[in-house]
Amino acid sequence: MQSLLRNAAIGLTLAALATVAQAKDLPEVGTWKLNVEKSRYSPGPMPKSLTVKIAPLGDKGIKFNSTGVAADGKALATEYTTNFDGKDYPLKGSAVADAVNVRRIDANTAERTDKKAGKVMLTQTREVAKDGKSFTVVITGTNDKGEAVNNRLFFEKQ
Image 1: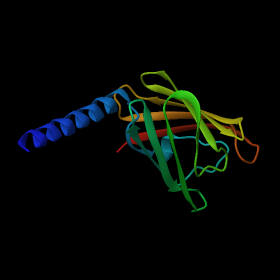
Image 2: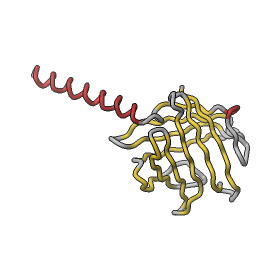
Image 3: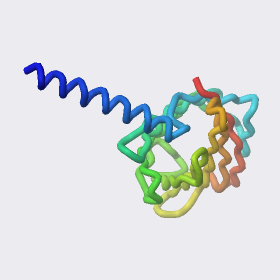
């Protein structure tokens, strides 16, 4: 029994260390809040608030959740999981897209392609600052109204 408990404790410790190591390898892991003053949103209007939570998933993926309040006061919420493997994964909660395709460009940069029925709608390039305290997302493409999108969003780690 003592051996079983010791093995369980060792297993839990190794799992915790693996999660910590993985989080270090994924600089976007954490909770991030949109800094509206440092962001630009075209076409507007800018959301009143937006919080992004990114958690490690498996050995090479993330779980992404965003919640916030739109300019008109309506709730915003999107989510997806991905493995940075260039494959399409379902996107929930977006009026613009129904799938995302995320690939790693370098250690601090990832590119996300948003698609609707297989058609590319938006490209989002997320770059985490070297100090790990912020990230910027540049979003280009077309929104659900057919308008050209050219956004630069600045997030700070919470």
